[in-house]
Amino acid sequence: MRYELFIGLRYLRAKRKEAFISLITIISMLGVMIGVMTLNVALAIMTGFEEDLRDRILGFNPHIVVLNFNGPFPGYADTIERIKRDPEVVAAGPFTYGQVMLSKDQQVTGVVVRGVPSQPDGVLDLQTSLKEGSVEDLGRLYDVAVEGGNGTAKLPGLIVGQDVARQLGLVVGDVVSVISPITKPTAVGMLPRVRRFVLTGLFDSGMAEYDSSLVYMDLATAQKFFEMGETVSGIEVRTSGLYRAEDVAERLRNELGFPFRVRSWMEVNHNLFSALQLEKTVYFIVLLLIVLVAGFNIVATLIMVVMEKRKDIAILKSMGSPGRSIARIFIYKGMVIAIVGTLLGNILGYVVCFLLKRYEFIDLPQGVFYVNTVPVKMYPEYFAMVTLASLLICLLATIYPARQAARLAPVDVIRYE
Image (tube, rainbow, N blue to C red; front, side, top):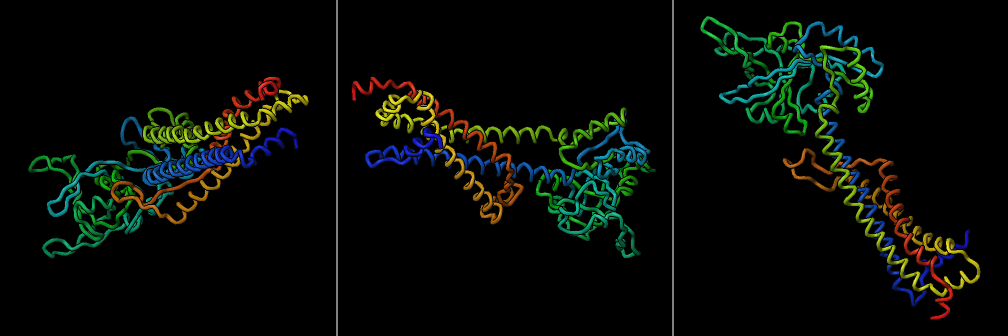
């Protein structure tokens, strides 16, 4: 062991008359520990919220969407085959898009209709959000009694969000009218297209934007209802990794060319996730100030130790110890405080995050947040980043006291003390 480190460790053990300095040392260590713990917990919670929101959004949106500048386009099967040639494309499938009104017993609400294949194509994971029913039910026809008792009619299925069902008072099995705002000519003038559907499922995304404005119907049914023929609004694509979507989208742009428009989920939701990333960065900077305060405590502690150990420093210099070795003694002392505090902070931060994730003992008010409890997501790189930031701040905090100790002239100590 280097003698600088040995002396630095000895200075951590205060004598009786130096009890106050020892107390300040402990407070400095606790300050580093609390700062590191708080920073780790905050980053884990912010990351949990961000990833939970991302997963919810991607549960109803593809990684990549391919549209046509000319609107609905035919021949989508060939386009899908070209898209699937990319090695990082896992699945691709067509969809339609349109706006309609839903009506039930004089209650009306406007919604967006997405027509998707009733046989899951692996692009979206809608089934996990369904509270009732199944995606396969969209492709079936249901026998419903005609009003007046004159036989039955075969009606297609429809899946709506729970907020839409609540607004219209719908339950699974009810019949609802779908009204298109696009009119068609008849003998009595222009009338909107109206068709009845059977409610076969309810989904709960946890996000009011989807639950109150989105409904699903079978792709073939949607094409017929909107009179699209064999055309589709676009193609949804799922990639092998979330963060590979932008690279895949760039390759598809080059492959498909004009008139296709290729957009990744990061491009579509750029503003939202940029705001979340900025918020996380601000939290990191603000909470890092706690560690900075602990760094000032280290500065104060080391200055007091330098003043207390003036005689020891003078003796060491008289014995030939150079100034840089004297500086190392106090740098080592400050870094021991930083390392112990940072290590304890990481351990406590991990324990707090584990307890929050395992037992979910913090309940969030329903209707305010889209989750019921605090989401937590821990990553080793975040712990490493906090550790490096803490140690760097504490290292900088030791420089001034160490330089003051190194500059101490032995003759001044001998003259006055």
